[in-house]
Image (tube, rainbow over all chains, first blue to last red; front, top):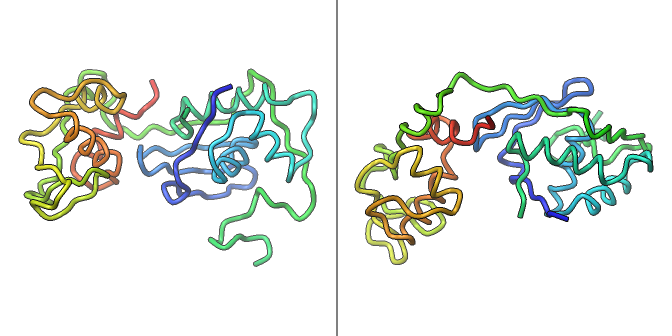
Length: 90
Length: 135
């Protein structure tokens, strides 16, 4: 299972927008609008690189999660974040 | 109010006071929308844009291995690139490919680190940002 990392949080400017999050990624100069659980995934990666299962475990420390969704859904979200340049594989 | 902010004043989403239900979504759902600035949009202009190393404002300074700018002659640092690097060369270099023509691999690594540190307003940033855009 691939492990992912995110840029340091000081490379991101973040504004919460009533359920959505606007994120300015300084290294690329791009702005993204992200919806849950993407901000939470980035939060967990701020603790250090992780694979989808570890990310899910970290999320479940703070949130109730529908067990039927699991790490497959996290992997799908990671793929989107990777396409946007917000996370990268180690 | 203050209890809902973390030390940086940011809303602390990861640490709710009550356990919140987080929907992870279906495989086909999309949670990221990217707003693309009107930078170089065509493959041609991206690959032909140029990144001076270092920027003209920092002319003469050397590049340390970590990409920071240091005084000329600093041990372990590298002389500036003798010509601006093209977008195509930088793209190849950042992806772990061969160094640009006339640049030795160690210098190329330092240059790559310098380019990764570029920020808005610095010469070459627009070119670097264009290279990073998902297509």
